[in-house]
Image (cartoon, rainbow, N blue to C red; front, side):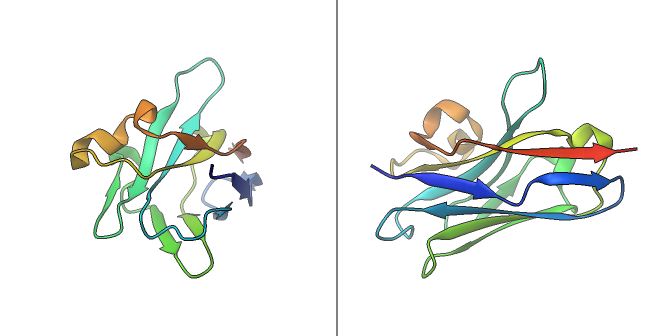
Length: 125
């Protein structure tokens, strides 16, 4: 069982930056795919970014603005968010899975079997 705990959310003005961090209880994250998802009020949870160890993938709407990175030694995954927009407002969740899928499948929330509790990000205009 892996427990994930996010931190770093908050209120920021449009154009600003936030750094989300997710700490994992696993002995090591090196065998896990790590993802970030978000869910805005009244909307479905959507893919933001994933780090598969050897490669990273981003949703089109965050490319060039967000960066996902992992530190296997510290068992953390970070989402650096720059140039934030009001439409980025959502609860952000980190997720992990040790299961193997084709790379395209890691954008799907149901492929992840461990989830954090979420952290609120609010971007004001």
